[in-house]
Amino acid sequence: RKEVEQDPGPFNVPEGATVAFNCTYSNSASQSFFWYRQDCRKEPKLLMSVYSSGNEDGRFTAQLNRASQYISLLIRDSKLSDSATYLCVVNMFSGGYNKLIFGAGTRLAVHP
Amino acid sequence: DGGITQSPKYLFRKEGQNVTLSCEQNLNHDAMYWYRQDPGQGLRLIYYSQIVNDFQKGDIAEGYSVSREKKESFPLTVTSAQKNPTAFYLCASTLTGAKNTEAFFGQGTRLTVV
Image 1: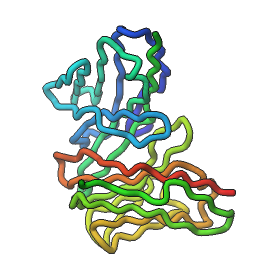
Image 2: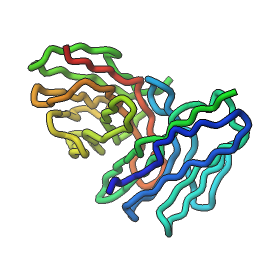
Image 3: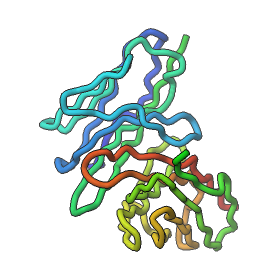
Image 4: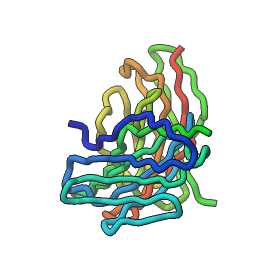
């Protein structure tokens, strides 16, 4: 089983739609969680951190369920510019080492 | 401005040759990472390091080597033992500890074996 799993998509949605991405992680020692966005042939960039209480940044809402080892990202009112791959990232801190593990990514295509 | 720099952006290598990818950061981060990304795939961890002169193998370390002689630098050598080296290589750095581990990335190096 992969340490971090995501639905690869693609998700094809019209502008204005609401779309949700899910991510599960296998190691309960995981301590920090993030969503990154990656555009084609570019490096990933931080979209938002994910906090236990859930957090929102404009049209984006992230949630964490530690009991179920599950992270989600909700995008409301999708824009054409949201088209990208969204990567779920988990940090496992153990024995003095940070180990950042990436999911394979979920591709989103927003169309007019 | 602080950041992380990878060079070169594009690299061509003949089969059987070793090649070294550069990664330098001036963010004063202790932790540095190398990832490999194949087309349509996610990032796979090659090596990571938390402090100078110490590094750990990631999930796909075979055929690669690293060094961490300075805090700012974490070069990756792709050796001739790596059977399928053509890929996009990304270097990242973070602070250490359980919190504040947002990763900053370089712009990547595209390696092609010809």
